[in-house]
Image (cartoon, rainbow, N blue to C red):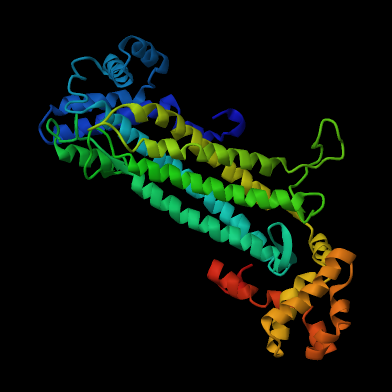
Length: 440
């Protein structure tokens, strides 16, 4: 997590100031609930809230921790310095450090999820706009990197929209699963704290009580959360790789916006490189890097050990900050992407009609020729295009065996590009759930 790939709102979630503020609110709400239950005096609970107007001294907490070697104790010591030892004597009663740490971590993850959901929403809007803009713009589809059959640029954007829409659903599910809190005591049995205190704190902090915890909240929840971030990162890379391929000089069907004064190479002034999408490919790797450690955190010794802690202190901020940045960057790339429809048509015709081979094959079988024989007839003409630069349509028209089955008009009809776009509106309705005529 470095400033170059960070945005301030997400970074703020993981700042020490935010973390200590959440710790404080958890402790204060717990004191309120204890006072409501008559466990501690009301005036002690009220005294804790007096610290709310005071900024916690991060440096002072760090200095205390340097001695205590315990972050929560350091914080509680500093809190007592602010409100007084007598007023603070019931703070943290019946609680364990993980009650504070785990509940805080999940609050931070839910807040991060809210930002990521907003990011995905913005990306979806950009993808949808470009999908309708190029709904009927013909381009060649490719399999194995080789020309296959015609599609449209709009369908390319639409399939990325559908993928990101699934990611929106995954992110919502991940947020809901991670939004639990635990104020259940040393090993989760509530031996020294009433379950109603947990319910009160969770309600105030926007969480639901963890049904059963040990000393920690179960880490399968976190594994699911970070796995979801990894999937979203992979989808970002999926889109980025397509744009990178389209920007290749030999293809040049689209390219990243190149701003006034931008430089592509320190050595070659002519260069316009897909640096943003290459960057996104790298950032996706960083986010996915957290998935396996998150899964390995699920298996802890007995009621808890601390092996998960160092992992989460890193992957919590690093993955959410990185993914937030990547989603925002991709949205900007999509918004500004420069598309070249004429280059798409030029690429379409590079193989001189060869991409219509399946239509001819099917027409021959419909005319009564066996599929094996029809495949042979089409392929022998296709190879002349590959190997000798011939025109596919002309070769078919001059093939006696093909002409015995298909007339000149029937062959010519098989080269109509519009044939391949007749169901675009149907696909758009499936993806966007609306009539295409009303979309813009």
